[in-house]
Amino acid sequence: MMRLIILGAPGSGKGSQCKWITKDYDVPHISTGDILRKNIADGTELGMKAKEYMDKGELVPDELVIDILKARLDEEDCQEKGFLLDGFPRTVAQAEALDSYLQERDMEIDKVINLDVPDEEIMSRAINRRTCENPNCKEIYNLRDNPPRVEGICDKCGSKLFQRPDDNEETVTNRLNVYHKQTEPLIEYYSKTGKVSTVVGQELLEDTIALVKGVLENL
Ligand code: ADP
Ligand code: ZN
Image 1 (cartoon, helix red, strand yellow):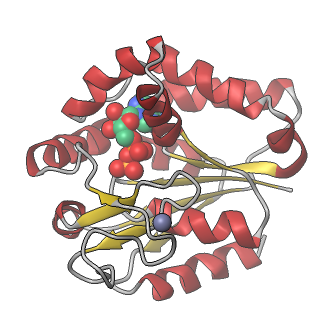
Image 2: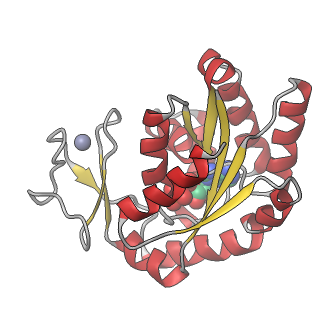
C-alpha cells in the first residue's frame, strides 16, 4: 500500500516513471490526463467540455477534475492498494480538495516526487514524442532518443503510434507557462509536510528510474 504523487511539468517524463512504479509496487496509476482523453474518445459530456481547454494547453476547471479524481479514488483498487497520482493535483485548490478527501478517510500521502526538468529539454522531447494508440500498451517513444524500430509502429504490440494533438510548440509553451504559474506552487505547498523529494530528470530514462527508486526504497 502506497500513496504517491508525482509532480513535474507536462512532458517532464512523469508518465515513463509511472509505468515502472505502478508495476514494481503494484499501485494503481491514476492519470487525470488519461481519464480526460478517454472521456474525449468516448464522446462524453465531460470529454466535450474538457477538450476545449486541453487543446489550448489550459487547465480543465477544478470542479470537473476534482469530481472525476474522487470517483476514481473511491474505487476498490485505490482503497486497497493506494495510488500513484500523475497530473493531479495541478492547482492549490485541487491539492486542498485531495487533502480533505484523505483526511476524511484517515489517509495520508507517503511521498511527493518532484521531477525536475528544464523547459528547453521538455520542448524538444514533446515535439518528438509518439505514443502507442493501444490503450493496454500506451508505450511512449521519442523520435530523437528512442525511436521505434519501424516508423509509426509500436515495437511492443504492433499498434500504430500517434502524436498527441497537444504536443505542438505553441501548446507546449502555453502548458509550461501554466505549469510554472499554477502547479509549481504545489512544491512549496507539499514541502511543509516534509514529504517532497526532488529528482532531477536525467538524459537517460534508466538513470532517472534509478534516482526515483532510491527515493521509494527509503519509504
Ligand atoms: P502531460 O502528460 O503532458 O503532463 P496530461 O496528460 O497530464 O499532460 O494532461 C493533458 C491536459 O489535460 C492538460 O494540459 C490539461 O488541460 C488537462 N488536465 C489533466 N489533468 C488535469 C488536472 N489535474 N487539472 C486540470 N487539467 C488537467
Ligand atoms: Zn504498443
